[in-house]
Length: 296
Image 1 (tube, rainbow, N blue to C red):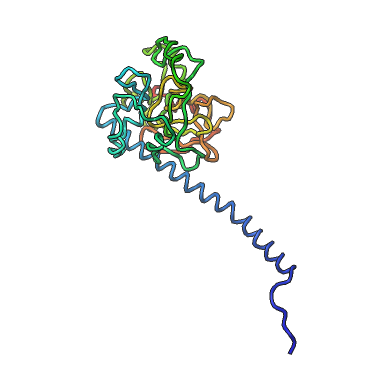
Image 2 (image 1 turned 180 degrees about the vertical axis):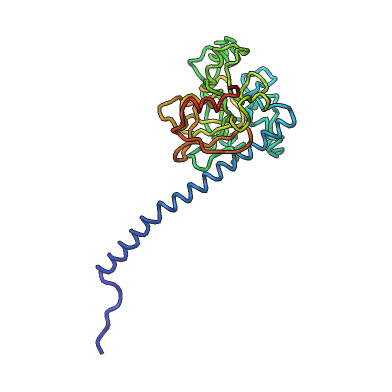
């Protein structure tokens, strides 16, 4: 009997490899697209949960949470709008670790900050670290409340602590929150819905809840943001809690305090009525600004 050859020839093996490579090349984009679609759905779900919590907060207090609220101990720390919604988010255990009237003292390491990492505030599409280190703003002359205190900044350590990362920031309006110190607190500088000047009620959103954006997303690459609160002596401190709608989402050459995402085509926003939509990065800038203001 003739001995039969077993196995594949080199040519046959190359053909098999080529077929597998072609199939992988065809399937990989679809797989990546499906994964991004799932991440985008999760991102929208996170924002919807924040919307529900914001409505519960409004039901309980008659207004939306302020963008930031200074602690009562006289230190330059302010808790963020999101931290004040912890009860509405069902985070009683996390709230028990904080005293919203007193500056936290334990955020000295990344490990300490990551104890407050909260998945709800992170967009799965973004490339984020669980925490970031805040450095003192050596170029700033004024406090965020408008008072001059150079000695306060001069005495600050270069490292002001570590903070848990977040992608979702309040809509401050069409002005940059970092410029607030240059305006009088009663000037109406902030024209958005999540601001620090005053309590904003739903009835103050004169364009209607369905026409007013209240929370948007921003990538960590633009500027690391946080849901917890911030040392007001830090660089871009208010900007790490709120965002500005001055041009368009995902504008690579614009100010870091604007809104941005890694979603193709735009950024997700929570509107006053609780819905979440992807706002196109090609939206007309005038309309974009109008949607971020609480007044016509």
